[in-house]
Image 1: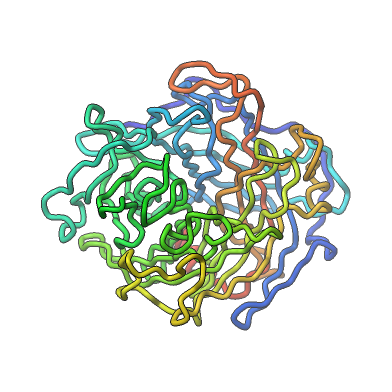
Image 2: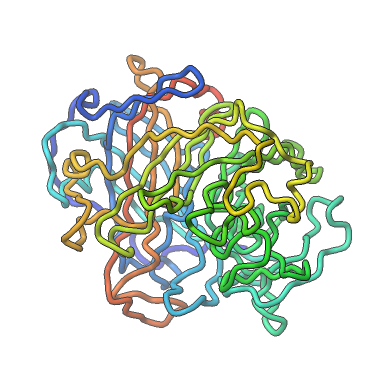
Length: 500
């Protein structure tokens, strides 16, 4: 399927300004944590950018939800004299759905960027801060399934039978969530993306929860189905992919595969549920902290993806004992991952004052691998009513990068808490991407990019060609942190970025 080309000139979302910068991040911004014998350092925010809430992409729809999933397009990351550039591939979720899900075709956009890291302790105003990360919308690819049929964002109300040959034939589909029997289109609520060096993309979704592989042109190639314990089932054991209500067992509604990442050195694809399955306590925020991380060997694409690992990850909890669900993961090094856990507060959220938005670290080095055991059957929960089975050792989870640090936010004209205006940090941060700083004096330093999901909230929005007013404008925000990550194998990261 062809790329949809822009019908307008390229727009750079930045304002011209001259701002001071230092060669190295200021020491007052640093936070250090230890995990698996390594010391990891957060040096603070170095970049901030915005795509306006009312900007329209080339199909005519409002661009939104793009923080649901981001990845660097392989081969595009470049650095020159302290300035960095490249292309982000961003994937929105299921469109503007405040009043119910819509027939939004899955798609991904390419956005070029120029990063001029800002490391001074002097506070910038909101407009000047946006010059540190300049963003340029480039194009859109619409995604289709079998027979070039458009995908949909509608809540799935029916199921298509598995194709002949599943699961032994890697390109044969399992039972698929479809909008309805009258509109038998594959429905996707995309939340994670991996950009492969061969031009294809892995995309994780919440409805299945499944993982799909698409071609560069947007054609569905392959579908990965997780173990039975994760699939949403009724009391009778029948599949029911709706997200409107919770199933009897399996992933909770809107708590599917939010996290997706890839270890290029081993060909291992990792996906993590946003929070616990229903049988593991996922029917209540106070008992839903024990989520599951899965690993598939996808090194040989001519063979079916093979489940090779499964671990329990304990998510952080609020002061009231509620789970801070995980919106993204990212591979750091063998056994070590980022986890973006957060509340739903901030601009466009439930409350102005947010309490938790962090890119934390966790390690599975000493965790119990439960794949292939009884826990893959929904009849055997790992954490009945939120109490972890004594036979399971969970991952080690440590707090790390705090998005809400008031000093760091102020440096870029942002704040947490009232007033509710354009400078209030967005509520929903849901993506991570990692790239090298390439400074010989800082060989273990990396940039961590993250973006918000604005839920398409705009007073001048367009959905499926129809104007709408959501009653609030929430821009698509991007942040860049500089971190010291001594466990990262830079050669492998460069390989994942298509730089080797």
